[in-house]
Amino acid sequence: MKNSYRKFSYITDIPGIKTSLLNMRGKGFPKQPQLNKHPCAQSDGEIFDEEWFKSTVAQKVTSHPANKLEFPFSGENIFEQPLIGFVRGDDPIFAEYQKIIGSFHFTPAGIMAWQANNNGVAAPKAEDISVVSYILPISEKVRADEALREEWLSERWAQTRRCGEIFSQILAEEIATYLMSKGVLAVVPDMTPMFNYKKYPDVGWASRWSQRHIAYAAGLGTFGINDLLITEKGVAHRCGSFVVNLRLQPDRERNKDIHAYCLQYQGINCLKCQQKCPVSAVSESGHCKERCGARVIKSTGYCNRNYHIFIYGCGLCSTKIPCESAIPKLTGPRL
Ligand code: SF4
Ligand code: SF4
Image 1 (cartoon, rainbow, N blue to C red):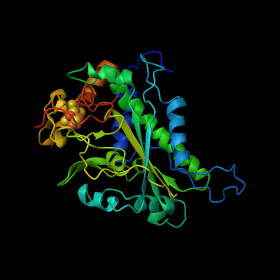
Image 2: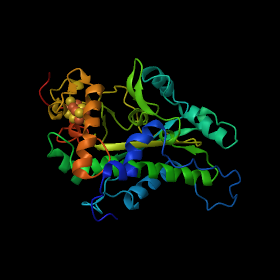
Image 3: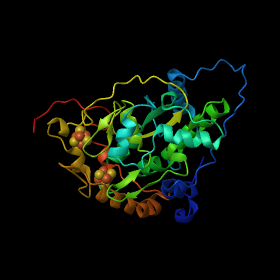
């Protein structure tokens, strides 16, 4: 556990540099796990069903040593108990995403075919694949710290952006590796060399595996006017997912209205997130990714100078708003 600040974080914070720069271009990830093609027939009776995934993710959030902040908050938990959802690999929403987000967006079957090819086995059919999506709600202490800020993100929030993303990757990678060791094909799409998050022509900033869209597909929430996903634990969270060669049953209903939980979109005067944004990247017409992205990138210097970590972030529009930690009640003055 760290007990002091690192020096010269611009060059010494290798995990931060990987998380903020290399991973966006599909670089810096551990090697893909290898599929055990001859798993022991006499296994310990483990059944990889929906309950297994829910309890395994929850267990990691509860007891994994990586779910912790660094100095000067060493030992504090980053995330609280997760929400989990499932999407079938043959769900038509993935074809929709290729139209709405872009043809570059992965499909579960496409990314699984890549993993199958890596391991010299036949690609599974889309109906034999599922996506496991999880929401990691940010702890109350981190949220309270961020709520006090008006210009730049708080130190706890910056650490959450860095250590929390690293934990989310470890969580997904450990589960995928375990499944592969048991003969179940699995892959973490945003930890593959083909992944990227970049500016696409005619689309703007986008990723090849949008975690928020995957979480929406799994019935975990709907979008706010600031583009964040409003879940039953609010918008202050990080989300992740992985793809498995198993038939898992979705158990959350997907809301057809993609803005069902946002007060403003439901005709109730709110825009509290707009008031929190220091660069007016949120307005009645939505979220300006360009303006937001420029502000977020600018925070790299602030985080290095003040918090001694290589990371960027903002999140000011995630706290002190009605949808911070719950779905807001649809009451209030109508527009
Ligand atoms: S603060 Fe209000 S307007 Fe902004 S996302 Fe939340 S509910 Fe919607
Ligand atoms: S993340 Fe920051 S810059 Fe982006 S919309 Fe929210 S408050 Fe504005």
